Length: 185
Image (cartoon, rainbow, N blue to C red; front, side, top):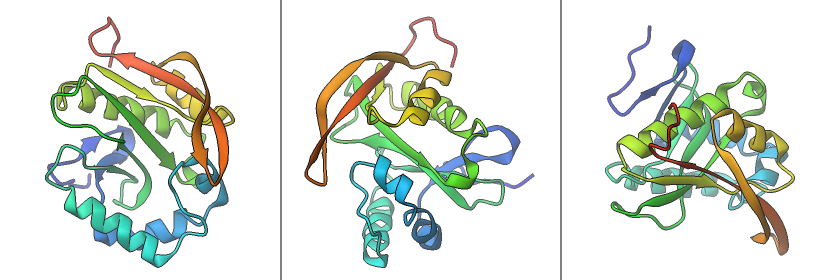
């Protein structure tokens, strides 16, 4: 079994969450050229450039010692195959947080995203002391809705014109979970 750094959150079968680093540039360049990932992530520029990867990974490196660090979803070898983390303004002591995520095409449909969401949720509740965790995927992203539901999130409603992406207003569905509400993590 591979040894993972101390900031690693274990999933099944050697998959794990670990902090992003500058070493992930090749993986970012590979995955973020996928139009489907770009279509479903609010802030991802497309086409994705090396300058975009450099900016993002430098941002991740600067956040390594903060609670806002973004986790990479990694295969057993440690290769970056996805990501998950808090989005938007959040600071220690806030009772709620929004999170976002993505997964490389070749890993979809295997149950990895619901598992990553569950592991990240446990981390947010236990380590970050968040009471309410929520996500707002685009209403058209049905796979994301299913992943959240499989991870125990409840659909709470429609947010009309909630996101603005490339000049277009997009509806979102809000999903949430409450810490300690009788749910199994």
